[in-house]
Image (cartoon, rainbow, N blue to C red):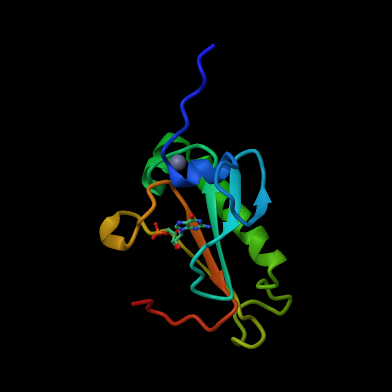
Length: 130
Ligand code: 5GP
Ligand code: ZN
């Protein structure tokens, strides 16, 4: 039988375990791993197992995958201690929080063309982001 072709996509290779990564969460549809160049004390990427080049394509192919990504990201945020037990929306000390970012398109800073959600937190996060 023919050996299946290995995708050239970096994140497909991480999903497949062909490139090492610090995986913090995995289920049937998503994989979460630490960013190799972290921009905050917590910087995790959450990707769908199913390859699509960006979130617009993922949403068009299977809208549920977007909910899966955000759900997984929120679970990782909780595991990282970023989800406050205080009432939401109080102060930064009581509710440090986190940010989910989905760069979509080269002009918006996307550099890896496999859908991914950045989870960043663990330091104050300015808004607007610049
Ligand atoms: P983008 O710029 O596409 O929104 O985000 C891509 C992210 O992937 C960047 O933050 C970058 O640091 C990260 N990244 C690129 N190559 C690798 C890698 O081989 N391993 C891991 N863990 N992260 C990577
Ligand atoms: Zn891929």
